[in-house]
Each structure stands twice: as structure tokens, then as C-alpha cells.
Length: 236
Image 1: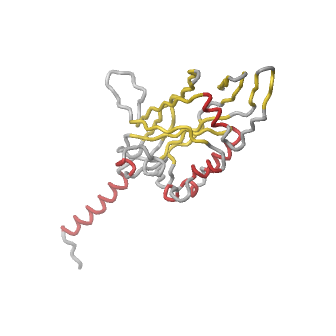
Image 2 (image 1 turned 135 degrees about the horizontal axis):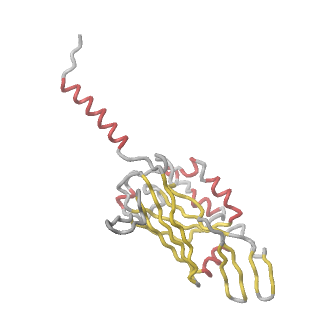
């Protein structure tokens, strides 16, 4: 009959327990969304403000980075279908085949800006904007005239698709803004703290392969009107 020494048993149990603890150390990312989302017309600027809510995931990530991308509404379906392809957004392949650069080279999106937000702290006795999980507040301001110039860089934008009445020209094509938040250990999180870029991160639910934490259009569509030399932005 084989004898199992207590020391050997304790080592085996310790190894098993350690493996289980490491596997279960981080809660799944069970939700990731923006709320509230607002657009403010501060002519000649437009401002978009939102809070990224992330429930679960590695607790070390006290910062996240967000990109705002400009695109035509007619290209929206194709853009969103492309990021469903797991190989296309695999973070291990992005250095050689960046999905974002690919969309830019196809003329489907234009990068407008990127910023880093720090996790909001909850304060006792005060009304909380963040009531659960981790929250990261973002705010971006854009020049309306600069948006019009950038829209001309989108491949399928047709500057001749217009309606003219007197001194006013309405551009018929609608465009939108996409918020893209990468996981922190992907090549896109260039501005977060160095230690976060080296710390394991994952997306919903426990997807460790994707480079995308959040990638969705903001719930607004925009169009332009030019009256003489003045560019006017319409928001719906």
C-alpha cells in the first residue's frame, strides 16, 4: 500500500488552491457601457461628455483611454460587422495588422482625439455619479469647422451630394462619432500609465484576446449646412 506523506499532500493542495485562486482572482466584466451621454453645442465648438461604466474586470486598472472616431452613418453597418471578426481585433496580431489602421486606410473612420480618464472616487455623503463598478469620465471638445474638414477625409463622403437654396447649402450625408476604449494591454492604450500597459486586462465576459473593451457609436447623428462662409452643425 502506497503511503502519502502529509507534506506531499499539503504541497499538492497548495498548488491546486493557488491555481484556483489565480483563475478566480478577477471578476468577469459583466457590463461595460456609457451613461450618461451628452452633446453640448458650444458654438463654435461641440462638446461630448460621457462616463464609461465597467463592472468587474481587473481592479488594478485605475485609468482607461478613449478614442473618438468620425464616420459616415452609411458605413456604420460595415464598421460594426468588421469588429465582430475575432481575428481582426485580436490584440496579439495588432502590431502587424492593426484593425484601426485598416479602417482608416479604407477611409471609413478618422481619428479625432484620444484622452485618458482616471477612475472616479466615491465620496461618502455626496450624490454619486458612479453607483457601482468602476467609472471613468470623459469629455471631448471639437471645433465645428475642423469636424467639417475631417469629414472630407472620409472616403465615401460626397461634397456634391447637397441641396442648395439661395446662399445656403445643405449636405445630405449624415455622420456620427464612435467611442473606442481599448483594453489596457493592447497597442492602442498608449497614454495610460506604463504599469497598466503591462498589466493583464480583458473585456466582456473574460475575453483576453480582443483589443476592444468598448466600441460603439454615440447615439446621435450629425449633418452640416454652409451659409455663405459659415459652417453650421445639425444634431439629431
